[in-house]
Image (cartoon, rainbow, N blue to C red):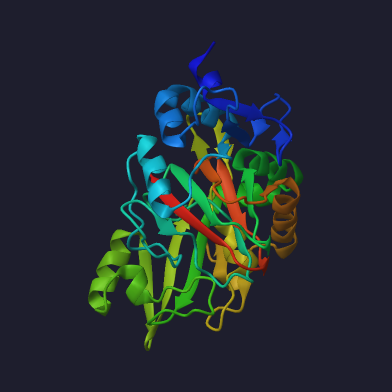
Length: 330
């Protein structure tokens, strides 16, 4: 019997989709109830790393459910057991997070009643994580699902339905514009001000760090307009030999409004500065929602995503509490 079969029990039909090729998304693994002793997720990952890497390559996402993972420290141990190198969520990241341990952060602390649109983590940056871990410390009362969708599926469907739009995105790329204040804004889905984003209270240092990250700053008193791009709209996934919808169009256009940013048509534009066609973008947002798997979190769940292959989002929390932790890997 294969070693992984003695440690994991793979389930099909639970919050999953099946592709034309029969690949299940996401893969869902439970502890094998026939194992001779309780299965620790850290031990199971270490013992079956090549098999899990192969499974992640095929599926794009793995949900580990039913394992005894209870705390941020437990989660940190799970991430360490993967052998993936740490990716530090540092300067340039817009999401508000609190670092809890060596490799663990809170997931985006945007107001829980707001939607966080579909995106690849740090797709706008020159360096981005290749793997993402999420952990459910406190399961949501109602709502607050994490939605995931295969990026190459969105690319192929949009190319088939809106070929001219995709061609323009291919040729021009995208520019992202966002005005951020000086300090933290708890009412904003982004939250971080420029001091937190660039980890300094010196404007000249912020400009230097922004330049290194491929960003341009335009000061507006104590506020600043951050301009990113033009950036490519798509990325070719070498491992899978697929073109992916690797951008922040949906999250920028579909729901990052606050008191400094109330016009989504200005938040993201073509690389030549021209506005995006609203009908095509709204069709994209609808498609993402229709094609995604909405994961209903259970306490102790650990979700592993291939950030190069899978877009993720967060639905509004309708009934608290909810606490999801995150970790990023190179």
